[in-house]
Image (tube, rainbow, N blue to C red; front, side):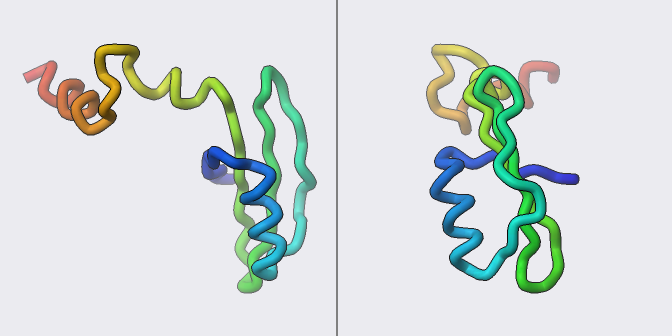
Length: 80
């Protein structure tokens, strides 16, 4: 199952339901602020959404790389 990270979890979940999705797995708090839910879209596809307050902190380098494009470019060229 693939889960998409969203910044505004509750609003995204409500919007998916309003657009015709049906709940597959309800909003489920995990640990340390991590929360997931899955819905089935009108075509039968299962879509997972998640919010993890630590996600961006773990996936991007710390300061001074505030601009993610600069951070990615630096990471890609660091080993050349």
